[in-house]
Length: 272
Image (tube, rainbow, N blue to C red; front, top):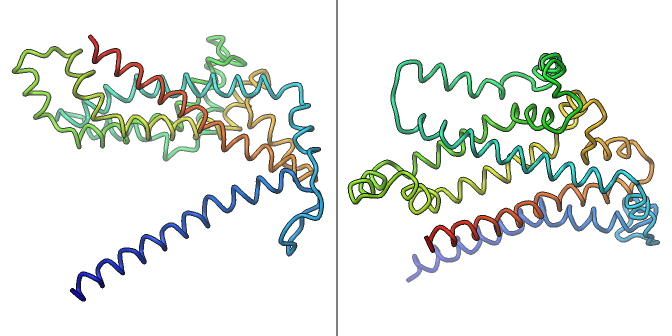
């Protein structure tokens, strides 16, 4: 009885400690930044601001480029996530299922963008983008954002396929299910945790790309980072805090929309 109590006591202690760490690392900073965005001259060691104001948010929403930058950021993020899904799913399937000559070389090539600075590749690709008319275009920015996102997408989906295995697919094939039915009724529901992780990670990485967007976009493709970083050197800390909140909310908004879309697709497939 004492052993069971000790086990439960240790488990509750560890759980409480993890909750406190989560609050300290994620919840508390978000609360502080939110209060900072409504404060005036809040400085350490003051526990609470002495005055509050909406001037920071007025400056943010008063920027005429804000709406365009948010729409462009969501558009670029959506296409980046979509391309990562379309490219990583077959690549991960092949790498996790089949063994063939040159497999290790292909894996190294697909993961090499992680080892090479993205800005170096962007500088080299800029001339190619100009020749093909992709520079200063959203399409060019989307393609260059694949450099820092696709290697992670392949790793995530490969781990998902390795957990899935091939036994279930073989059984479904024996029972007469075609590739389309096997993917949408068997593989897709089991791969949803990996797909969610892929979408969130690739969108967040794409959201934070300033240098790649500036080089390929040439200042014509205005995303939220391009609008945010000039304010970052501003003395108005409320504006910086407000932009930080926008950066935190955009991935949540995107993932919420994608989650609704995924559920609608799965429900439609199940009806068929």
